[in-house]
Length: 277
Image (tube, rainbow, N blue to C red; front, side, top):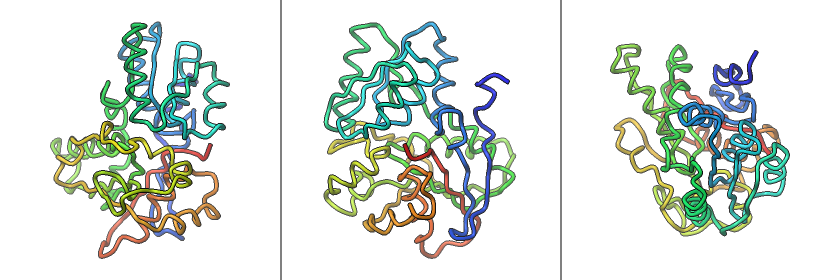
């Protein structure tokens, strides 16, 4: 079996403690849903190209996994060393530059322009198109709510698009509520003015915007059946690590938001975007 054949069709399991289903995108080859996006883009531009990406971790790891020495990954200073080492082990070049993702994003753009490389950072290409298939894989489950760990809403936007398509094709009768789960100082939620530096480190995989809004996927909120949610109880969120130590902390955030969501009934799904690095 080719490596590409192992991407997608990830397992769905039910967790009694949370009272929801888990869509295990961490079972993709590089350990996250980003493989769906990466492969879609590589097939679009071709494997002979050199790709560059601004990444807080998982997208860079995925690109390195698939393109090895033909990949350059620009990561912000808050990126944990294990993620950087993982990218290097796959053969990609890593550049640590910029305090937060918003700065790194601009640096990647400049390097791509000067070298003639393909910049596959969010908003440079439509990465969300690779995530549409997740919705089709959830169709038979008939979910009422989908909770998505999110920094720039790319994944949530792709999932929303998939359900919209299925409704238009009469493949489903009802749309689920797609909930993009962000940190509480995110520009779309703003439960607090700032997040402590230690939490920025822990949740770095979804802390992609710094103090700016440059990486926002604003088009996500154009769907009438979506919303953003967060919580200021980050210490309580981290307690989920004792139950789900293998998952990315961003997943714990989405789990906590789903568990604490008030006045909702129906079938809930949390997207397990990746493993803890």
